[in-house]
Picture 1 (tube, rainbow, N blue to C red):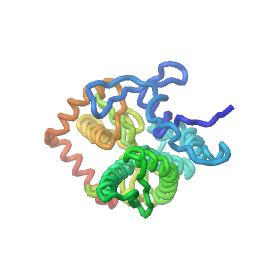
Picture 2: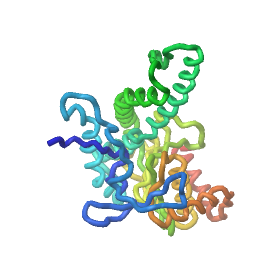
Picture 3: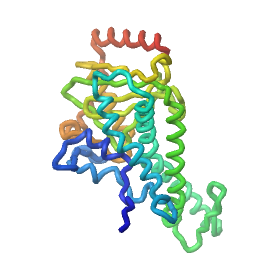
Picture 4: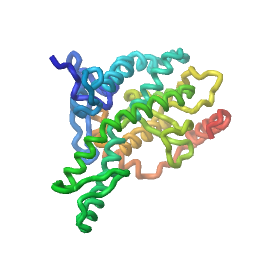
Length: 328
């Protein structure tokens, strides 16, 4: 009997389940809202979202060859997730061992690269180029055009057929490249410092089908391999994990923990949820309350918010601390 996995999650169920609730044994449900229809969130089983058929399947004569990437994500990432999640959400744990640190960093960075957003962005680029060059070739009565040094024959095919054919040919190379990039970046960032923010608030963190956020202190263009990037991931409705640059060289395996309440928690949630909405490819994920009121949340994001005097003082202290740590 063929046991090969065809429907492959690009955001693991082990991760998605932390934003939902258990309906019955091995069945977890979250609420989902399409970016184009935010006013209609609906419940869905985690087994049915963030899936693409044969996304990671490779060509090969054996199951082991064809399922190499899928099994890597399963055995190296997903089977470890509950263990590292318990550590990260245990407020009493401040120091971890090298093996656990490696598992955490690898989980974050593979999740950054394994989502379909990278492939979709490239395919949109291909779509534009093919459409333009196909039309030009037809006007010039040519039977081909060139793309990335390769000759694309267009006789007896329309542009949509050419695009689909090209996407199928390049998908395998793309998913292999993404995994290689993730492994390389994981090595670069292994010495970075981990931080956890926990919020106590009536509102909650949400996530999305593209949950890992890259940012730079001070803003500006983000390059994925920049070792100074902040790499953040909401873990559940109350916890968020961030991988910093290596500012604390004496304690690379130390987990800093911050509890935010009131206005600080509100702003932390606001930033995370807006980031998740912006970077989501198709949909955002969370609980019913957060998603049902998300359109109102976006209206609020457009309004300038003047911080209270108490918050200004706290922000000044945080800025001073950041300067001392070399994070300015």
